[in-house]
Image (tube, rainbow, N blue to C red):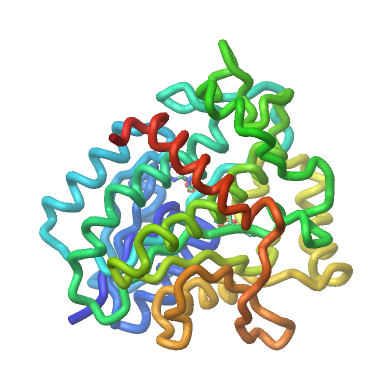
Length: 315
Ligand code: NDP
């Protein structure tokens, strides 16, 4: 049978390119989990994704109710789930003030980490039950959260500190809207959320890989400088960022190439190892990359897991 894969945020950028790459093989049925149904349908059509190989389902990661509803709807469809890809993200580098999810969490960490944390925890049961040959749970990471890289050292740097803001609920009222308890900074909040994504993947691996056989993985697909992620940035940045990445850092990768990379992490039998943060070298070959000290801190991963459980209402 065809594999079934859920991709969050498949209405643009990396998620859309991955949906296309997988659907075109004819081996995958792609469930595009998107907050804007019409936009996703239009994006799928104009990308030319074969109709019989995808389905759009509504999911707003900035609402825990919506996440639970999505899981119910998916289960009602009766489809087995073979791979889950947590890809969606928001990035608000120019925001002066924090915005918040339906549940009152700062929007970047609320969407990119907490929404995905609840989704992945709930759907792990479904992935476990699948009889597919290689079941996977993938969380898209980023280099920007990795302070052991050049890009990860551009200020403001990711830093979760002692997680005091997260313990307080990231609500900007009786707690800070930042995980480390500091002043709001949109660019840092995004990087922090990506560190959370990478810590979560490793905690999943430690807790569940042996017992379930599920492969847990993260990746840095390269700098996809033209995606919607930079839509909130100032126009001059948006103009200069793609050539800067192409010619100066040489980290640039097209949406199409990045989509192929993530599709590889979904389906390539050679990438079935669990607990890995995949990257690609200049020749576009995969290698197991090192994470920064903070992004591989097992004690922090455990603490993050337990606080996140409380915030999203898991027992
Ligand atoms: P895009 O902005 O193009 O795509 C982000 C997707 O997330 C969109 O489909 C968007 O939906 C969706 N999304 C945002 N908020 C929500 C929400 N509340 N509920 C559901 N979906 C939501 O960015 P990219 O494709 O660049 O980013 C995809 C992933 O790649 C992210 O995890 C990002 O961190 C990562 N990444 C990107 C890099 C880059 O250089 N661009 C580099 C490294 C990692 P909508 O279409 O409705 O806005």
